[in-house]
Length: 390
Image 1: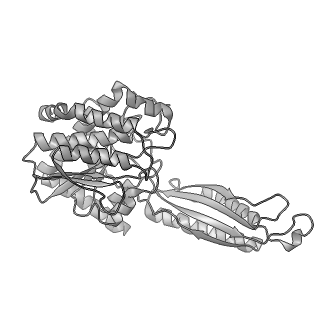
Image 2: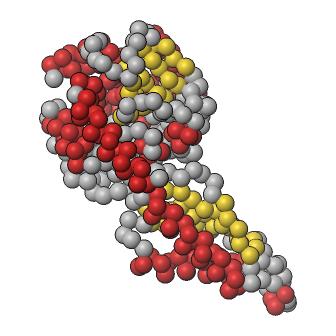
Image 3: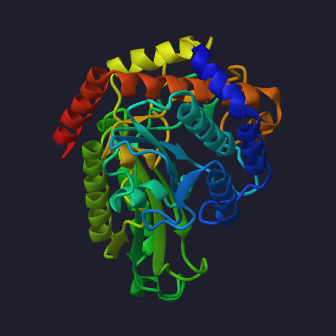
């Protein structure tokens, strides 16, 4: 640990300055032009060979130690998109700084590590799912594993997420005057309402990991006109992609039935890619708990899966480590995507998370680089799981 901590202190102020810059200059998903440029310039000044954009994704990058000739490679991921109105209330600015600090310290403190550690800039986590497209286009192919740290309101060994996707439904009816000629119309809103009721009736018959959330984005044009077109926006989540696809089929069958029952028609599209779940096991859990303990942190029991992220699509290709680090003092009321969470980035808690997070990730890379059997077990377990999911 002493060697790790020395390397961190050497680069700490630079990494903290980077984290502060991103915090103070938030850019939302798809608009991270200046954030990406800042990171690219920073890494080039530190001696990295940087390719930007990378894997066909705007505002992305791949940073490689230009002095490294090692064949095996792993990657630290950098997220840097913010949220509208509330800035880096998900902590991506300091999450990025943690990855950069860990990479710099690993390069200098462990020059003989039999593993090349790349940095990959992955924009658009909050919206669009940039890693989904980067994974599809080969951005993570050939890596032994990837890792990153996310800020949170407790210390967690892993980010437990759900597989997720969407459907956008459009019900078509026939317009008519709602008072003078209602019998001439076919009510698209009735079809949509019946669909929503049918979906709610399914809640008691699906597994507890399954979720769906929907809103009406268009409900008609005027109260005295029978609605001709009604649109619904639905998100679906499940513990696995197989469970997600079963939920999709239930939803599509409900839509067909609702349209048939109301004399309307319905069509749907999926606008965003499927988000995969994140594979994790007890061996990886115990390993990560030990890394946290070595910096004086105690991992809390997982509250269970919540939300979804494009990191699951990276995991479709390679093993992923995605621990969460507390920046709130275990405050259950200070949650991500809230202004109060963003405010913690302007306190000493951000610096402590930066140091500890980098130390945790460095331990992971040193162990898996120096212990081939440990890495092989993780890769074999991951491959077996994904083969079953194929």
